[in-house]
Image (cartoon, rainbow, N blue to C red; front, side, top):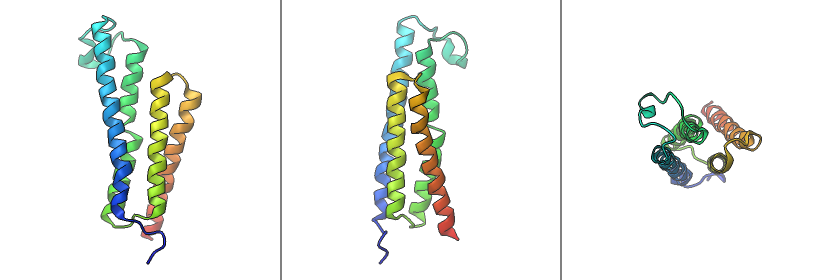
Length: 143
């Protein structure tokens, strides 16, 4: 047997955590926007086209939400592909967890103080490099 082999369904645990983080960020966006409307900081019509005056914290929450559908999409596709091809190993599992942890750290930094790019960027970069390694390993394994 392959010493790096793992139960392939284990790859879904970090995927579910990533989905939970996405749902949390989505719910947070809802409450941030609701607060802005109730506090008369933004007009309800703003949400028709997302143009016009709005507080910076509303834009930051929207940007964070959009981020959850950028780099993480590569993660979701990668997990599904390696699972379907039955090629999940312990290194893949470690990469998946590292990616999810990097996204959690990135989310915490965005929520606590979205202006801290000096801290936020390294968390993003770790996730990006993990996806480069994960996809590179996948392509190499295909050869």
